[in-house]
Length: 464
Image 1: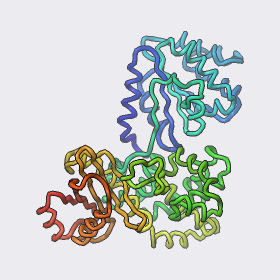
Image 2 (image 1 turned 30 degrees about the horizontal axis):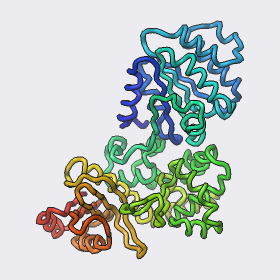
Image 3 (image 1 turned 180 degrees about the horizontal axis):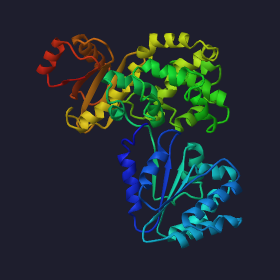
Image 4 (image 1 turned 60 degrees about the vertical axis):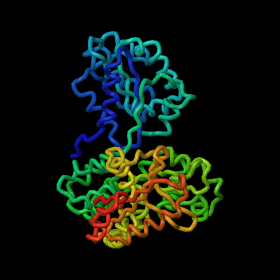
């Protein structure tokens, strides 16, 4: 079973809000399986807390279920016999009878289902907060996994609840740097492989923890039609969007390497203007992201933008599983697995490794190992297919860092540094006397010649 790992910042925010004098109102949101409920349960441990999980039933059924939870919390056996036609009396009884010197933590999980059952519920809860809860020693946590609905019901300016929250937490996937805490006996290469599929999602990590081999884990947990993750993308998207087929087609096209809007439109045989709404929605859901070369001065207006699937699991699924669904559903898993093995590392893991290295450069800068105060880190490319895996910029230091990432089985040599230096000359940025550094990341180490050269040069750094 996956352990509670990281979430230091999120837990710190919750504890800070708990210590706030008077009432507090926190919104926790993020995609499914990311660990929101686990975080909240860990936070509530040892505190006076009432946790209610909303369902997709009618508002009346939810109100009855909430009434029973309040009755249990208050130890009031007569309450379940009373029919409450409104929400306000339930909250009034909760704060009147359940208050003590200790702050009450009231959690409403999957809050968006209440607004889905009754569009007026955000207004109802606004009134409950303004006239009842905000006047007592109460910490309210509204949690939701449907990002689009949580935005419209709670976070957006048009929402009746806008301006009420005292804090918000957007839960995201766990970073790669914590993977060694889950897979203690695995090599760094194996950690990257497991991260490339599970993508920092705690529930997926839990499923993969007992497997010694990445391909066995994929076979057991994804390729098997009866497995938990076989149809996971449908589950993730079907409640967030209508036209799920259109969104699937877009993600599949991007996962196959069609990253420019024009290429996506051509692949799907649609107009570019018809894609903009769908792309914007997928970006808001953290499924894809729009990238521009890190040196672009106006990223919002750049015509060099590319789209990539941001979620490692979805990239993996659409690249390797979706094309083989017919084989898998007809019992030919071995065909899909053997095809996957041929390109899993080169077409998928190697690119995830680049993303890990970009994150590592931030750490190296913060630790002072690479002596540059970085303000931006990303990729760089031009119209002539010249690409650099990692580029870090520091306008304040007039410094630029160029990086190359190699997920190989053999040590890399001086030729890799030479090629990186040649490519760096194509990057127009900063003043003519800019300071340049070169960072090489390698999964399998470096040749003796390259190590010797790095020892002689203060502008070259090697990291395994």
